[in-house]
Length: 273
Length: 331
Image 1 (tube, rainbow over the protein chains, first blue to last red):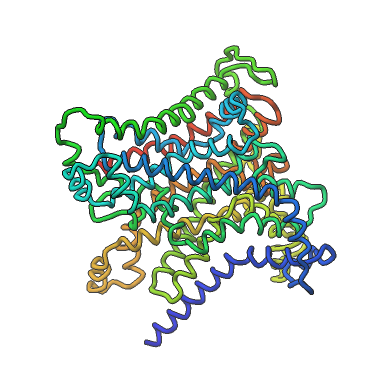
Image 2: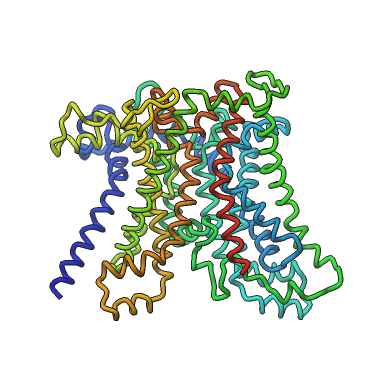
């Protein structure tokens, strides 16, 4: 019994040490962002602020506010459209085996693994041609299309768990393809939508490559603006940390409130295991 | 895959109703609906993934290396040029060492954390959430924060100094140009750039929770009877882990390696935010090189060649994985 107690103590000690190590960046972001310009000093990074100063939050927010707006305008419609398409595709692929589905699905799936550099030049040419270059709707379109594979995959897996008997019974009752989707599948899809919604919102909010290559200053999403903050001549670490905190807040909130679903999306991205 | 999505029907990707599939029915609109549902998405993918890749491939074979498109055929000239360049050779070195270090550290830390969390501990959810939360952040945020933490005259180095590290020999982290062991190779010095280690630390902080989540799912999928049997046989805890648990985790390890490899081969934002290409390209990557070459240098054909190189490297890792996991579900 004594050995067991020692073992448990070591276990918790290890866990706490690791947890603290993972939280170090959070501590540094918070203490740095709450210091005034005068108090920022390389040698005293770890010290708590002598008095709380929220001016760096005000400054970061002023600089990032329009871009935060852009990011919401980008991520919310992008997420909704992606989830709806993913749901429809997942339904067709999991509940209605049709000829060619075995070829179509892997071909769609491969799209989520490609490096986006390999489509970037044509994407920009195409967006310029149709007049959507440097617009948020253009970015929405891009995220919806390149989000199709993962959204389809997650919903396909999710619907595989809905018993076939339900569908068969409905077919016998004469309910058609869309009727089954509306009356059986959709009401059972809520947690699927939550998983896909969180996944897409987080990915679109955090995405950088398309955002930086497809938008110019007034139209840039928040991550590009945050990156530009640090590009300025004098590095104001307090403002940067406040900016990082503000830019990370929406996805962090989603994570804190719905972490269970976040992890499900995370695991779903690995196809199988 | 997530067992939470998976059900008793077995494979997570199937669950297709065989009865519905095999029954011969006359053609009706009903039978066309599934295909019509998929069609728009399929066309979008066909154009934006495959069509655009083909177009990039074609660009990489042309002379378009200025602002004015010049689509005359150049053969493999851009590729040949690339492999002879200092910057691209540095990219290959960096990609190799970044991938190895990143995967190795994520696996080791992820497995360790999963084992700790799996020991029926109190506040399990809290610990799990702390280890996974960096995954919810953008690489840009991570890059900005770790740039501050690894700032050579501050942050981590202050702690190293407090522990008695010689102040004149503190690591320069992402500002360092040191390469260990620095063997002359091609045009570059071969070895692990110190600056790259700084990027690896940030990346591992962000992604090791992912490895933990996968391993935890793997551990939870091992039937309790297997552990029981080992215990009855009188195996020590340590031995039981290596002989019984670890082999069971092999498929999950393979999955994790592939997913992490694919992330590391695409890594762009973190480096963009934290260091950029670095002095003498010590932290440069093909992804960053492609971006600069194409959009700042206007060498479109050369940029396209880098992109195609990235795609091929990734496909070598991903395609066999995709085929094997989809085949498994077909059984």
